Image 1 (cartoon, rainbow, N blue to C red):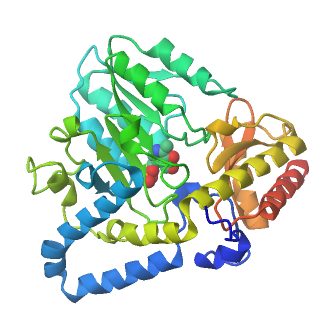
Image 2 (cartoon, rainbow, N blue to C red):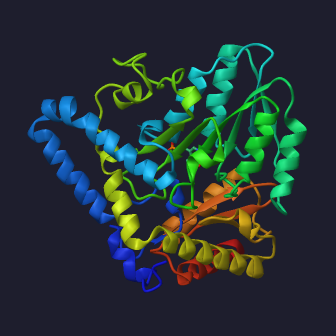
Length: 386
Ligand SMILES: Cc1ncc(COP(=O)(O)O)c(C=O)c1O
């Protein structure tokens, strides 16, 4: 662990963040570090110097090199990884590739990301399968609660289960090893939606033993926006096709995904540059700083406004923090509060209405300090009394 490194505002210049902006929402879109943006700009120049040579000769080996880098970080072999535009595209690729039919059941949770819920709904609509939503308990005491909820929902008709690695609205790290074992024992395959996981928590994808794993490298791994990652177990690769079918149909997993029509490949090809930045910072130290900071910030909110915090073992670099109970617990109120924080205080933070209360989904990145969260709590307090 890089213990010499000072994080916080001292490293903020690594990102082109606007001076004065308090940015407590790294998770939603990511923020790309300057060295990665510089590498991307240089790569764009290189491509434009001879687009045909680059796209038809250089692209493939460079994509494979980037996939090999992903394998060194997230486990397994480069040939088991492909890049997608984002996590949504990876989820759609899997859903269009599996055979579901009437009588089959696709299981999601009430905390599945909304866009993924839609993709699942659409897959069921087209195939005649049933979509079942399992309610995860909230507030949550521990991982056992999640395992019990899933156990109660699995049945002989369950063909596919979509599980978040880290839930979006509630920012909970789910106990995937136990959940996946349960699904497989029930005869269901598992697609993990790890959109928020790489970079936020330590991830060993093959060790999870899922059937497919979808992630984003533009959220927490510093890649340029538009860098999704898709891993497939060897047994699933032959039948897995991209959401967009192009020239390489049936030529193999890597070939199909490495060319899905003409597009800008720089987010994928700059993943190694992003990984270099993470290595320089020390991935372990980054995770440790972010986890400690976000938990301390949530404790501050809980003391100030009263309410529960998430279990430590289910927390990465984001967590829900309770907001004053006098605020109405509606989506409109959440949108209004978020807008006022941004407009009046230059604070960007995600606000969610969940189970009868408003919560701030706090996200810590190494450019944040406790002072930023204190200012957010002060601003929310003032707004709630106005
Ligand atoms: C759990 C989860 N899945 C999927 C996504 C979608 O990511 P993208 O918009 O990059 O496809 C998100 C985005 O926040 C998410 O939180």
